[in-house]
Picture (spheres, rainbow, N blue to C red):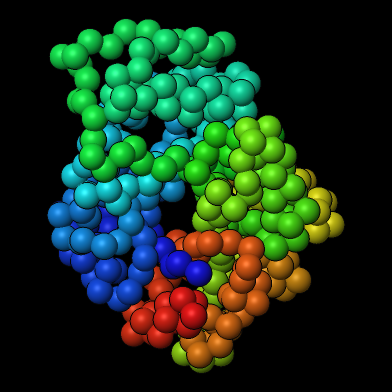
Length: 338
């Protein structure tokens, strides 16, 4: 199992050193997410101080950006990094797309499929000279002159991952993508019962094999050198789990585990702005369902028990307030590799 690291430095000036250090610790990939900062710029800087580690947007929000804009950025990153870039795209949710980004939301699943197909059409034009002639319900691309084409790259085009949780988007990933970026709330049960069957359905539509699609997961982890440290870190992860499940989009995951009533209560509290009260609804059973808990010398084994054979790549999510203990990471990474 490969192990990826999420870049945490908020000042771009610190990214090159953080990236270099992560590669030295033995991580296989570097990831960025689009929250309060652009997801592409840090990877450009990370490429300057690394040579082996993959560079991944996990994820860049697709719909506020034209596929043409993303095609240019992804191509530049692929070339600059020596072929180490993986483009991860996500849809976000209706409220953010319409009210934060002021862009269109309708039909997110079909729109996401066309988005990836548009990228392929653009890249086919640049790589092979194939006429740009993509016409869909949401995107239309038919103009490309030599002056605006970066031309073919010897490194090829970057793999495309999409973040998917609902059955439709999982089928889209299986149909048109090289990988799927799994949300940290994804459990083995949801992965087995919902995600993988729908990935397989999408792959079958395109005449592909399921093993052609990489699964990249991000699991909640609570660990430390001793039990006291572990217990002190549970509250922060509870808050993050509560935050995610206050969004109705994620209710299907709770339904699989019989926690749907908790999700409804969390959503009600979020509407009232009572964010500080929400973590109290995450009991020990829920915490153990969505987080792997254990000391440094046991956590790798427990992660392999939970995700081994199910995913190809794992990023360890310790919550927003705790950084993974660096002194323990080389051994944990080595154990996850074996």
